[in-house]
Amino acid sequence: MKSDRTFFWRKLHSLSGLIPIGVFLIVHFGINYTAFYGEETYNQAAAMMGNLPFRYVMELFIIFIPLLYHGIYGVYIAREAKNNLSVYKYEKNWYFHFQRLSGIVVFLFLIWHVGTTRVAAAFGAEVTFDMVANLVANPVYLSFYLIGILMTTFHFSNGVRTMLITWGITVNQKSQNFGKMLGIVLFILLTGIGMIAIFAFVS
Amino acid sequence: MNQTFVHFIIQRQDGPDSKPYIEEFHVPYRPSMNIISALMEIRKNPVTRDGEETTPVQWESVCLEEVCGACSMLINGRPKQACSTLIDTIEQPIRLAPLKTFPCERDLIVDRQRMFASLMKVKAWIEIDGTHDLGPGPRMSEEDRQWAYELSKCMTCGLCFEACPNVNDKSPFIGPAPLSQVRLFNTHPTGKMQASHRLESIMLDGGITSCGNSGNCSEVCPKEIPLTHSIAALNKSTTAYSFKRFFVK
Image (tube, rainbow over the protein chains, first blue to last red):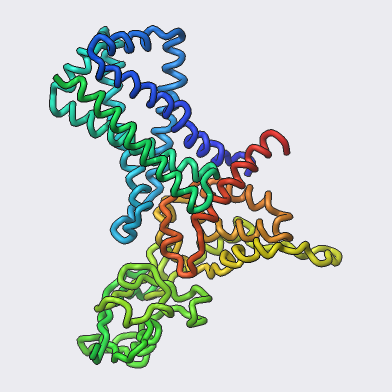
């Protein structure tokens, strides 16, 4: 039985959603938000990120490996659930199923998102304001972004709420309600920042 | 309400490997009937609504006062106890079906072995036997006794297993009720002496980390046991224990 490391892998899955993925998400949204101040500010911020030291090592260990682990293990976890929303229409049951649905949607969105930005950059494209502006000029791609942002902010905010439970921080009803409020505030803030940012690219 | 009969639509099944089928019954109405008394009427006169003779519908029940947990079934699609569900309080026609999470034995009888196997996995008992007289155990504080008593009301009826989206054939999850029992026995002053064994048992595959916080268990529990509170408390215990196990123990 000693070889059963389920607890460790599940806790790592939970933690990876906040550190580093959640932290990266907030930094990423912050950089995006600079588009609100104009093309030049955004290009400066993007260049600053692009010129960080140890960039490839950081990308690998802070972004790609944690994302792949969280995503692939997450899909595996989601497969264990049966959908019973038609019978049990409770608030938290909605969150439960939507957490799994949003996770899968975000996973697909990220494949497209990384493909059209980082992979494109690897083939010589420049990561600038124009790159994103050209993408969102297409209404289909803009809708990908809107759905992707909403699903990401929900998944992260609800993930913070359930993480507080699964790590044993919010145990009773009162603190779990507080966790929910925190999740709602996070969702509104991040969605607001994300939406303002993406529409800054729409001319 | 001035009615003469109650209309039942019952999902039946002749054996574990047979196909389920539907039969409908008209049961003479009496005030204050529960589901069990209606099933007894069908047993007295096993004739379908169309006048065809059939076999009596089989069900399980023992105590008839919502403490044994045997008469769990789907009543109008909701998992409930047949004894404490009154005909006058629910919509008609009344649809009965066996719980879906457990394998059907016959008609409304299911095999709840999965739940008892989980209770064994988590060591849901208190070890009081020794080669010599162990003497009386330590006392429990009244404060703890009050909430622990609520957890002890669990009757392994299986409704939380039925409602949990993570209890199914594809998942190894041991289920909500056995987790709450770990909290109960780890609170008991004598049971506490094996606390780490129980925590270890729920940190394996299908243990506490298989809980997805849907909260359905607490919603459907007929004894109103705060199952999600128990699971959250165990999240705290297992997290603390995992650090202790790595750094100290």
